[in-house]
Length: 300
Image 1: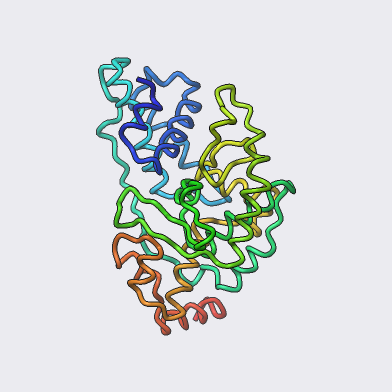
Image 2: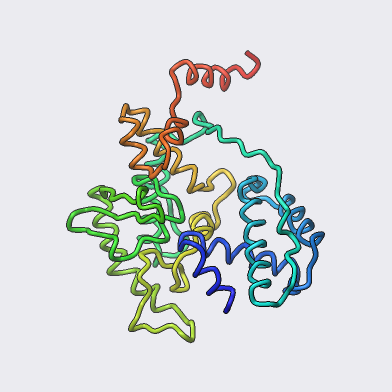
C-alpha cells in the first residue's frame, strides 16, 4: 500500500493534500532519507519550521502542529507497511498556545475587499478569469482555501446561481448564492480559460478524455493545492500588497455581522460548527472606539 493510498483511505479529501505536502516537506528536510530517522530528527525539523516565515510572519502554532501530525502519519504508514518496527515521534506533542482571539480591528472593510477584487492583476493573461473567480469566492462566499479547491463542476449551478460547499461533516454542508457578477465570470472561466489550463497538463498518466472535475485548476492543468492559492495570487506583489486568503474570509464574516445580519444566519453561511466561532467576530461599539483611539494615540 502506497503512502498516497494510506492517506486517501483514512483521511477526508479536504486534508489529504495538506498531509502529503507536510510529509513531502519533511522528506526534503531529511534529504529523502527519513525511514531511519530518530526522535531528534523530528525535533530538528520542527525547530527548522520555527525559523521559517511566510510573508515575514512566523508559522502559526496550528500550522506547526499540522506539520507534526503529517510526520506522525508518515511513520504510522512505515509501521503498517513493516518498513519500521517503531514510531519515533508518537508521544511528541507541541505545547504552543494557540490564541483564538480574532483581531477584528485589523480586518478588511467591505470597501477594501471590493478594492482587492477590482485591482488584482494576474501575471499571465490566460489566468485572469481564474484568479478573479478565486478572489470572488473568497470575498463573497467567505470560503476557506480547502473549500475553494474542492469545488467540483457538479457543485456549481449557474442557472440557479448557487455553489454547493461540501463538508465531511454533513451539518456544515451548505449551498450559497452567487453574486450576479460572479455568474458570468465563472461561465467565462469554465468555457475559455479552464480548457486551456487542462490542455497544459503534461502528466504521462493524464487522460484528456477524463479531465479533472475540480473547478479551480492551476497553471499546469492540475487541481489547485490549498496552499498554492496564496502563492498564485501574490506573484510579484510587494509585502504591502500581499493578499491573505484567510484574512479575506474573516473580513467577510465580520462585515456580515457588522451589517446586522443574524448570528445564526452568518454561522450557517460561514460553515461554523459552533455559534461561538461566529460570535468571536463581533465587536462592540466601545471596543471599536478603543481600537480607533489606540491607532490614533498609541500611548493613550
